[in-house]
Length: 489
Ligand code: GLN
Image (tube, rainbow, N blue to C red):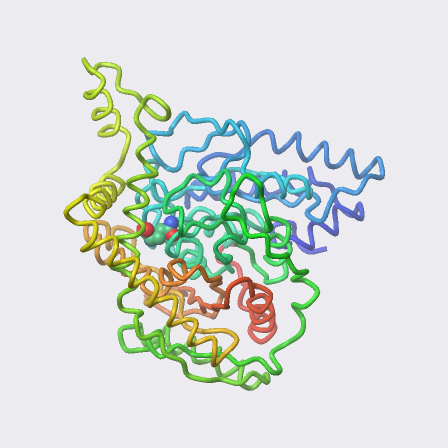
């Protein structure tokens, strides 16, 4: 058996089910690793001590001969904007510093029923707004490959935790790239499922028409198992689709023969770092040698993705964040003399700069004089972005390109330049606008200052075709094996 921290989801579940190890042994080894190393990275906001009881109960079930489930004893870290019952959900914000989840997210409940153990909550940009985890009210997370750089964001804590081998899997949320971009920066696999594939019940809303929960793992098969368990209809979320959930693990080994892979011309132009493009091209060439047919496709409206996203996402955020008023939810200022002053002071004190910027932008876009010029127009461009992909999928089964235009950038590099930060999502946000599934998978490294910095290959499928993403990701793993390397010993 390999070292516990090197073990993946399926490997741990099988070892616990067969009695080769116990859930408690796995959990204690990973907690010790986190306590020893995470001070340097800040991936976790807190560990959950209740996980120890959860692990003991699971071991008792195994000992009693009961089926402990397909995720038996698998420790999973959870982004701190997803509700684990009775645990804190801070969203990386002062305004929710003391907020305890009164109920559990559907995705969490399903993982729990399958035997997963919730090891702790991970750091994020405040309310998932950001691309570097520097917008967290509780301090930034650092990239395990280079602690002078960001792990990406907003799910930076989850991506860093899986990369540093603090846990075999983590959950994040992706509104414009927040799973895929940090997965790319940290050299792990991160999947944003189709909009509606996974229930959003218990995920704190940012942009309700864009948000999805998804997994981070170090292998395609591990992500397939977690996704299958989380996915499916939910009476508590009317946007969760009733489309049947396939057995992704059953088809994951089918290889590339007969698949048509489209390389998006707009994702490979000279605005993208040349070293990144070179890594992506190497993966595409390897796919061709392994039997896939490669075609070029066009996504002509790509350059409108960022402005469109920042109108839709901020508009929805301004409405979703209205509930943090110090009355229904959130920090309350106790010195204000009247209720209006109380609302204003509570929100002034509770929200950070980026969240305030988004609320102002979104409220402006929705205001009477601007609605047609901004919001309504953005919705029309959103249709064009969706049509780009529809046309591409007439010519291919999957679209490939880089996940991010650059390798991980330095901490502090973009904090004072919101537009530069927003452009980190130029290749990811259009999928959320179109509702499509996409994953970032590890595609090697570029060298800078004597450090190896991860590059991510983005694999995009048509709606509800996560099965094809897992197939390609699994094939890529066998062609490359990059996810086998660890940034820390
Ligand atoms: N970085 C993007 C933003 O700041 C995406 C965030 C996300 O997907 N949650 O909005």
